Length: 301
Image (cartoon, rainbow, N blue to C red; front, side, top):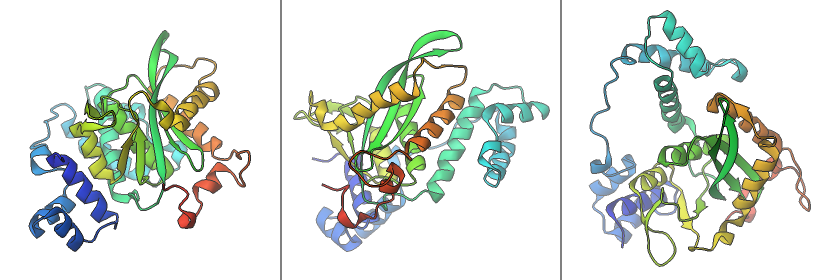
Protein backbone atom coordinates (compact mmCIF):
# COMPACT_ATOMS: atom_id res chain seq x y z
CA UNK A 1 0.00 0.00 0.00
CA UNK A 2 1.63 3.23 -1.15
CA UNK A 3 1.26 6.67 0.30
CA UNK A 4 0.87 9.33 -2.36
CA UNK A 5 4.50 10.40 -1.97
CA UNK A 6 5.84 6.84 -2.12
CA UNK A 7 4.00 6.21 -5.38
CA UNK A 8 5.23 9.52 -6.77
CA UNK A 9 8.85 8.72 -5.90
CA UNK A 10 8.73 5.18 -7.32
CA UNK A 11 7.15 6.20 -10.63
CA UNK A 12 9.70 8.99 -11.12
CA UNK A 13 12.62 6.69 -10.42
CA UNK A 14 11.47 3.86 -12.67
CA UNK A 15 10.62 6.10 -15.63
CA UNK A 16 13.45 8.63 -15.41
CA UNK A 17 16.10 5.92 -15.03
CA UNK A 18 14.74 4.01 -18.03
CA UNK A 19 13.37 1.00 -16.16
CA UNK A 20 9.87 1.69 -17.52
CA UNK A 21 8.64 3.54 -20.58
CA UNK A 22 5.95 6.17 -20.06
CA UNK A 23 3.45 3.88 -21.76
CA UNK A 24 4.34 0.99 -19.43
CA UNK A 25 4.11 3.24 -16.38
CA UNK A 26 0.67 4.50 -17.35
CA UNK A 27 -0.55 0.92 -17.73
CA UNK A 28 1.10 -0.52 -14.60
CA UNK A 29 0.06 2.32 -12.28
CA UNK A 30 -3.23 3.24 -14.04
CA UNK A 31 -2.11 6.84 -14.52
CA UNK A 32 -3.58 9.53 -16.74
CA UNK A 33 -1.03 11.02 -19.16
CA UNK A 34 -1.25 14.47 -17.52
CA UNK A 35 -0.67 12.95 -14.07
CA UNK A 36 2.40 11.08 -15.28
CA UNK A 37 3.81 14.22 -16.86
CA UNK A 38 3.33 16.12 -13.60
CA UNK A 39 5.11 13.36 -11.69
CA UNK A 40 8.11 13.50 -14.00
CA UNK A 41 8.35 17.28 -13.83
CA UNK A 42 8.19 17.66 -10.03
CA UNK A 43 10.04 15.76 -7.32
CA UNK A 44 7.03 15.88 -4.98
CA UNK A 45 3.23 16.24 -5.28
CA UNK A 46 2.02 19.87 -5.36
CA UNK A 47 0.88 19.66 -1.74
CA UNK A 48 4.48 18.94 -0.66
CA UNK A 49 6.01 21.97 -2.32
CA UNK A 50 6.66 25.13 -0.33
CA UNK A 51 4.41 27.99 -1.40
CA UNK A 52 6.65 30.96 -0.78
CA UNK A 53 10.25 31.22 0.46
CA UNK A 54 10.72 33.21 3.64
CA UNK A 55 11.90 36.76 3.20
CA UNK A 56 15.45 37.62 4.28
CA UNK A 57 15.39 41.34 5.13
CA UNK A 58 19.05 41.49 6.24
CA UNK A 59 20.63 39.16 3.70
CA UNK A 60 18.22 39.85 0.85
CA UNK A 61 20.00 42.91 -0.63
CA UNK A 62 23.25 40.91 -0.77
CA UNK A 63 21.96 37.67 -2.33
CA UNK A 64 22.80 38.72 -5.88
CA UNK A 65 26.40 39.48 -4.85
CA UNK A 66 26.76 36.14 -3.05
CA UNK A 67 25.52 34.28 -6.13
CA UNK A 68 27.83 36.30 -8.36
CA UNK A 69 30.83 35.39 -6.18
CA UNK A 70 29.92 31.69 -6.15
CA UNK A 71 29.33 31.62 -9.89
CA UNK A 72 32.74 33.22 -10.52
CA UNK A 73 34.33 30.62 -8.20
CA UNK A 74 33.49 27.90 -10.72
CA UNK A 75 36.30 29.23 -12.91
CA UNK A 76 38.75 29.67 -10.02
CA UNK A 77 41.23 27.05 -8.75
CA UNK A 78 39.61 24.85 -6.09
CA UNK A 79 42.08 25.96 -3.43
CA UNK A 80 41.33 29.62 -4.10
CA UNK A 81 37.57 29.67 -3.92
CA UNK A 82 35.57 31.65 -1.38
CA UNK A 83 34.73 30.24 2.00
CA UNK A 84 31.68 31.53 3.86
CA UNK A 85 34.09 33.47 6.10
CA UNK A 86 35.67 35.21 3.11
CA UNK A 87 32.25 36.03 1.63
CA UNK A 88 31.25 37.52 5.00
CA UNK A 89 34.34 39.75 4.94
CA UNK A 90 33.49 41.00 1.46
CA UNK A 91 29.87 41.66 2.41
CA UNK A 92 30.99 43.60 5.50
CA UNK A 93 32.81 45.94 3.11
CA UNK A 94 29.45 46.58 1.43
CA UNK A 95 27.61 47.31 4.67
CA UNK A 96 26.25 43.90 5.62
CA UNK A 97 25.36 43.75 9.34
CA UNK A 98 24.13 40.16 9.67
CA UNK A 99 25.83 37.02 10.94
CA UNK A 100 27.89 34.28 9.33
CA UNK A 101 25.44 31.39 9.81
CA UNK A 102 22.86 32.71 7.33
CA UNK A 103 25.63 33.15 4.77
CA UNK A 104 26.75 29.53 5.26
CA UNK A 105 23.15 28.39 4.79
CA UNK A 106 22.79 30.44 1.60
CA UNK A 107 26.07 29.08 0.20
CA UNK A 108 24.90 25.51 0.85
CA UNK A 109 21.51 26.27 -0.71
CA UNK A 110 23.13 27.77 -3.83
CA UNK A 111 25.50 24.82 -4.24
CA UNK A 112 22.63 22.37 -3.81
CA UNK A 113 20.61 24.11 -6.52
CA UNK A 114 23.64 24.27 -8.80
CA UNK A 115 24.40 20.58 -8.26
CA UNK A 116 20.91 19.73 -9.51
CA UNK A 117 21.86 21.05 -12.92
CA UNK A 118 25.15 19.31 -13.65
CA UNK A 119 25.32 16.20 -11.43
CA UNK A 120 24.64 12.92 -13.22
CA UNK A 121 21.64 11.35 -11.50
CA UNK A 122 21.22 7.58 -11.27
CA UNK A 123 22.83 6.89 -14.64
CA UNK A 124 25.42 4.53 -13.22
CA UNK A 125 24.68 1.07 -11.81
CA UNK A 126 25.80 0.42 -8.26
CA UNK A 127 24.81 0.09 -4.66
CA UNK A 128 25.71 2.05 -1.58
CA UNK A 129 25.32 1.80 2.17
CA UNK A 130 24.79 4.73 4.53
CA UNK A 131 25.27 4.99 8.27
CA UNK A 132 25.72 7.58 11.01
CA UNK A 133 28.38 6.92 13.62
CA UNK A 134 29.47 8.85 16.69
CA UNK A 135 32.83 10.50 17.17
CA UNK A 136 34.50 12.53 19.91
CA UNK A 137 35.87 15.93 18.86
CA UNK A 138 37.12 19.09 20.53
CA UNK A 139 35.12 21.97 19.06
CA UNK A 140 36.20 25.48 20.01
CA UNK A 141 37.99 24.16 23.06
CA UNK A 142 35.13 21.98 24.34
CA UNK A 143 35.07 18.19 24.05
CA UNK A 144 31.79 16.92 22.65
CA UNK A 145 30.17 14.17 20.59
CA UNK A 146 29.55 14.70 16.89
CA UNK A 147 27.68 12.74 14.20
CA UNK A 148 29.74 11.10 11.46
CA UNK A 149 27.97 10.47 8.16
CA UNK A 150 29.48 7.66 6.05
CA UNK A 151 28.47 6.43 2.60
CA UNK A 152 30.31 3.44 1.16
CA UNK A 153 30.27 1.63 -2.19
CA UNK A 154 30.86 -2.04 -1.30
CA UNK A 155 32.19 -3.18 -4.68
CA UNK A 156 35.07 -0.69 -4.79
CA UNK A 157 35.29 -0.24 -0.99
CA UNK A 158 35.26 3.52 -1.61
CA UNK A 159 33.95 5.66 1.22
CA UNK A 160 32.96 9.23 1.91
CA UNK A 161 32.53 10.76 5.35
CA UNK A 162 31.65 14.09 6.93
CA UNK A 163 31.30 15.34 10.51
CA UNK A 164 28.20 17.25 11.63
CA UNK A 165 27.20 18.78 14.97
CA UNK A 166 24.27 16.35 15.25
CA UNK A 167 22.34 13.69 13.37
CA UNK A 168 19.16 15.21 12.00
CA UNK A 169 17.14 15.49 8.79
CA UNK A 170 19.21 18.40 7.47
CA UNK A 171 22.56 16.65 7.98
CA UNK A 172 21.14 13.37 6.63
CA UNK A 173 20.19 15.14 3.40
CA UNK A 174 23.36 17.22 3.21
CA UNK A 175 25.51 14.12 3.73
CA UNK A 176 23.84 12.47 0.74
CA UNK A 177 24.28 15.53 -1.46
CA UNK A 178 27.97 15.82 -0.65
CA UNK A 179 28.54 12.08 -1.15
CA UNK A 180 26.85 12.09 -4.57
CA UNK A 181 28.99 15.06 -5.57
CA UNK A 182 32.13 13.28 -4.34
CA UNK A 183 31.37 10.07 -6.27
CA UNK A 184 30.06 11.99 -9.32
CA UNK A 185 27.04 9.70 -9.44
CA UNK A 186 23.97 8.49 -7.58
CA UNK A 187 23.77 4.75 -6.77
CA UNK A 188 20.79 2.72 -7.96
CA UNK A 189 20.04 1.50 -4.44
CA UNK A 190 21.07 2.58 -0.94
CA UNK A 191 20.86 0.41 2.18
CA UNK A 192 19.99 1.93 5.59
CA UNK A 193 19.12 0.84 9.06
CA UNK A 194 15.71 1.91 10.39
CA UNK A 195 16.71 5.44 11.34
CA UNK A 196 13.83 7.63 12.52
CA UNK A 197 14.99 10.29 10.08
CA UNK A 198 13.82 8.02 7.24
CA UNK A 199 11.30 5.65 8.84
CA UNK A 200 8.52 7.11 10.96
CA UNK A 201 6.88 3.73 11.66
CA UNK A 202 8.39 0.24 11.26
CA UNK A 203 6.12 -2.36 9.64
CA UNK A 204 7.05 -6.04 9.56
CA UNK A 205 10.55 -5.34 10.93
CA UNK A 206 11.90 -3.71 7.72
CA UNK A 207 11.12 -0.16 6.56
CA UNK A 208 7.45 0.80 6.76
CA UNK A 209 6.04 4.31 6.76
CA UNK A 210 8.72 6.66 5.45
CA UNK A 211 9.18 10.28 6.42
CA UNK A 212 8.18 12.97 3.96
CA UNK A 213 11.70 14.40 3.74
CA UNK A 214 13.25 10.99 3.04
CA UNK A 215 10.80 10.42 0.19
CA UNK A 216 11.56 13.88 -1.21
CA UNK A 217 15.28 13.06 -1.16
CA UNK A 218 14.67 9.73 -2.89
CA UNK A 219 12.35 11.30 -5.47
CA UNK A 220 14.81 14.06 -6.30
CA UNK A 221 17.88 11.84 -6.77
CA UNK A 222 15.98 8.81 -8.16
CA UNK A 223 17.56 6.06 -6.06
CA UNK A 224 15.81 3.01 -4.59
CA UNK A 225 16.01 2.17 -0.88
CA UNK A 226 16.61 -0.98 1.13
CA UNK A 227 16.23 -1.14 4.91
CA UNK A 228 17.90 -3.64 7.20
CA UNK A 229 15.75 -5.90 9.32
CA UNK A 230 15.30 -4.59 12.86
CA UNK A 231 18.18 -5.78 15.04
CA UNK A 232 20.00 -7.14 11.99
CA UNK A 233 22.80 -4.56 11.48
CA UNK A 234 25.00 -7.20 9.80
CA UNK A 235 22.99 -6.54 6.64
CA UNK A 236 24.84 -3.23 6.54
CA UNK A 237 28.13 -4.47 7.94
CA UNK A 238 30.31 -3.01 5.19
CA UNK A 239 29.54 0.58 6.07
CA UNK A 240 29.60 -0.05 9.81
CA UNK A 241 33.15 -1.40 9.45
CA UNK A 242 34.10 1.67 7.42
CA UNK A 243 32.70 3.95 10.13
CA UNK A 244 35.33 2.40 12.38
CA UNK A 245 37.97 2.70 9.65
CA UNK A 246 37.19 6.40 9.20
CA UNK A 247 37.32 7.05 12.94
CA UNK A 248 40.68 5.28 13.35
CA UNK A 249 42.33 6.81 10.30
CA UNK A 250 40.81 10.30 10.04
CA UNK A 251 39.93 11.16 13.66
CA UNK A 252 42.95 9.97 15.62
CA UNK A 253 44.17 11.78 17.63
CA UNK A 254 40.90 13.42 18.67
CA UNK A 255 40.60 16.37 16.26
CA UNK A 256 40.42 19.94 17.52
CA UNK A 257 38.87 22.58 15.28
CA UNK A 258 36.77 25.74 15.25
CA UNK A 259 34.89 25.33 11.95
CA UNK A 260 33.01 22.22 10.81
CA UNK A 261 33.15 23.24 7.15
CA UNK A 262 36.92 23.68 7.16
CA UNK A 263 37.41 20.35 8.93
CA UNK A 264 35.09 18.60 6.47
CA UNK A 265 37.13 19.92 3.56
CA UNK A 266 40.07 18.07 5.07
CA UNK A 267 37.98 14.89 5.37
CA UNK A 268 37.16 15.10 1.65
CA UNK A 269 40.89 15.22 0.91
CA UNK A 270 41.42 12.17 3.15
CA UNK A 271 38.71 10.27 1.26
CA UNK A 272 40.31 11.27 -2.05
CA UNK A 273 43.68 9.91 -0.89
CA UNK A 274 42.02 6.71 0.33
CA UNK A 275 40.75 6.10 -3.23
CA UNK A 276 44.37 5.50 -4.26
CA UNK A 277 44.68 2.57 -1.84
CA UNK A 278 44.83 -0.89 -3.39
CA UNK A 279 42.65 -3.57 -1.85
CA UNK A 280 44.08 -6.93 -0.88
CA UNK A 281 42.98 -9.61 -3.33
CA UNK A 282 41.82 -7.15 -5.98
CA UNK A 283 43.60 -5.65 -8.96
CA UNK A 284 43.81 -1.90 -9.10
CA UNK A 285 43.12 0.89 -6.65
CA UNK A 286 39.73 1.83 -5.22
CA UNK A 287 39.54 4.65 -7.75
CA UNK A 288 40.10 2.21 -10.61
CA UNK A 289 37.46 -0.17 -9.26
CA UNK A 290 35.10 2.76 -8.88
CA UNK A 291 35.45 3.37 -12.62
CA UNK A 292 34.94 -0.32 -13.50
CA UNK A 293 32.53 -0.65 -16.45
CA UNK A 294 29.14 -1.98 -15.38
CA UNK A 295 29.26 -4.88 -17.85
CA UNK A 296 29.56 -7.47 -15.06
CA UNK A 297 26.83 -5.82 -12.96
CA UNK A 298 28.99 -6.24 -9.88
CA UNK A 299 27.01 -3.59 -7.99
CA UNK A 300 23.63 -5.15 -8.59
CA UNK A 301 21.98 -8.07 -6.76
